[in-house]
Structures are given as structure tokens and as C-alpha cells.
Image (cartoon, rainbow over all chains, first blue to last red; front, top):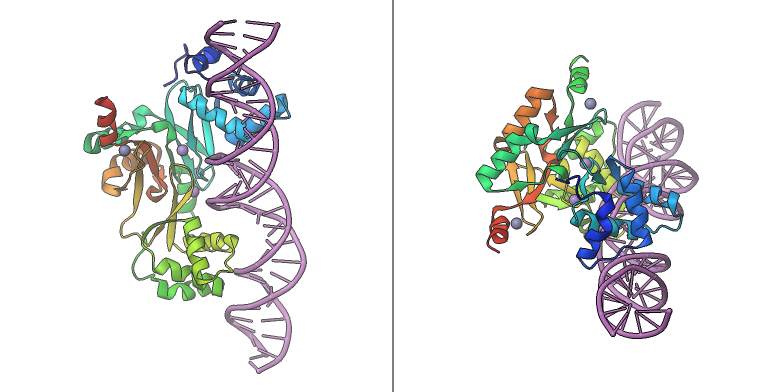
Length: 149
Length: 149
DNA sequence: CTCGTTATTGCATGTTGTGGCGATAGCATC
DNA sequence: GATGCTATCGCCACAACATGCAATAACGAG
Ligand SMILES: [Mn+2]
Ligand SMILES: [Mn+2]
Ligand SMILES: [Zn+2]
Ligand SMILES: [Zn+2]
């Protein structure tokens, strides 16, 4: 999980510790991210960077997202269609539920996913990356709507 | 789940029942699918179709996969990178486990995922589409390797 | 077998990324 | 402040799909 201490204000130092560099392009993305919370797709981040710097190159943004993820400042998952979704400074690690019928999404926290995470850990020694998980299915409301027909 | 009765031999009839058509392009894909079992990505299917008919157009293959999925003859999920993976006539519905460290994958059947599926059903009335699920994390062997360092 | 309807195709183009490569520019050192 | 190492950038090409549109061709009806 991302702790408040490793805030956006220290990104520069965090990069330098690893011999990495603080560039204008990275500043732009960090700027965007620091004003974002919750979820954003990669392409949305590219757009938002372009609002600040129209010269923004997509590959630079995606590559920077990779290094920020290695630093633990963002985490990514995939929507129901497989597209990248970034978690920015999430208060608590979580995965996602997605209804393929109405398109609704809900967060599922460790406590709720505990049974799955716990049983895979126990039976296989497998450590689940909850923030990468998106579970697709049909929500209660949509199931009722179908049943009533 | 896909039952043996709705075999590839009856695809043509299944299509006609719905007012859909049996075309050479669809025949090619069904041909490929009938000789495939387990998992294939979309692009692999395009390649395999091209081996039979070099004129194969990707969009036609992807669109045909959509209709075959509506007929219940294939099911798709997404790999760790979000790319499509198709389940062809799976003996038993299952999701996937993927180790981000060694790249290994394992199938997880309903029994094993029961705790998760059951608890989401109980607490939210949410019906999980297990075959669309890919859980990413770290496998036991890779965790040991890291611990030993 | 011939028609007419309309599902499907192929094409062009767009979206979301990924990766190689040579040029540029951080930044630690002097 | 100038210098040199090398991380990073911009550019281009490519992968994996998705989608609108006009031309084509299944196929049921006569
Ligand atoms: Mn999907
Ligand atoms: Mn991923
Ligand atoms: Zn719903
Ligand atoms: Zn592993």
C-alpha cells in the first residue's frame, strides 16, 4: 500500500535515490497525478498532460507510469475490456467489481476479498495482487431485472 | 458452461436459428477452433485462420468471435497484460492465476474460487463470471526465491 | 433458378499501448 | 561554470483490437 509519507513532494528524491532523473515531462505527469485521486486510465492521463504541455508524447507518459509504479506511487489494473486503469494514492488497497450488464463498478477491499486471497495463499502459497484484480459479472439489480422478465 | 451437444458440427444451424449466416470466413474460424482446445489469444486465431485462408481480415475474425461467444461456443478472459484469451469448449468453467514474476499460469476451478464467488453472491448478490477472471500475483516458488535472497 | 432483403465483409481509420534507436539533456564531479 | 556519463526523450513502426461505411453475398421466398 502507498503511505502518505511517500508523497508527491518527494518524488524527485525518490528518483535520485535510484539514479533516475527528474525531467519536465515527469514533472508534468506528477503534477497531473497529484491533482487526481481514485482511478484514471492511461489515455486519460495522456490527455491531461497535454492540457499542461501540448507537446506530451504518449510513450513518455506510459514509460513514466512504469517507473512511478516501480516506486509504488501508482498501481494499475485492467478494466473489463482489458484497458489499463491506474489507482492513484489509494487510501486502501482494493480490487474492482464490474457489471457487464449496466457497466457499474464497485471497489472490493481486502476484508471482502479475504476469503479468496486467503484460500489461494493457504492452498497454493499464491500472493494475490488485489489492486490488479477486476471481477466481471452481473450485479444484483441487473439480475433482478432479468428475472422479472 | 459449454455442453458437448452444442458441438462445432451444429454451428451452422445455431446461426440460422438466429437469422445469422454461415460464411466461408466463419467456416475458416470454426475450423480452426474445432482443432483447438484450451486457450488461444485473438491474434493467434487470426494467424491460424491465415494459414488456411491468407486473405483473412482481422476485424472479421474478432467480430465472428463475438458472435460465437454470444452463442456460448467460446468465452474470453484477459491475460495479465489485458490481451484477450479465449477458452475453447472448456471441459469445466475456470478462471486463471498468473505469476507476474515467472509468468506461470494455473487454472482455478469453481471449487477453489468458491469462497470468493460465494461471498460476493451472498453479500452483494453479484454473479461472478469466473471464466473472465485472471488473478495476478506471485506464486509460491517465486516467493520462496525472493525470501531466500 | 432468380430475386430481394439484409447480414456480413473488407477497407480505412482510430484507440491504446509497446519497443528500438539516435539525439538530447539531467546531474554528479571537478 | 564547463565536462562527461548515461538516463530519458521524441519519433517511428508495430501489435491488438474496435468501428463506420459502402459493396457483396447468404439464403428464404417465389
Ligand atoms: Mn472482457
Ligand atoms: Mn497488468
Ligand atoms: Zn448491473
Ligand atoms: Zn512465479
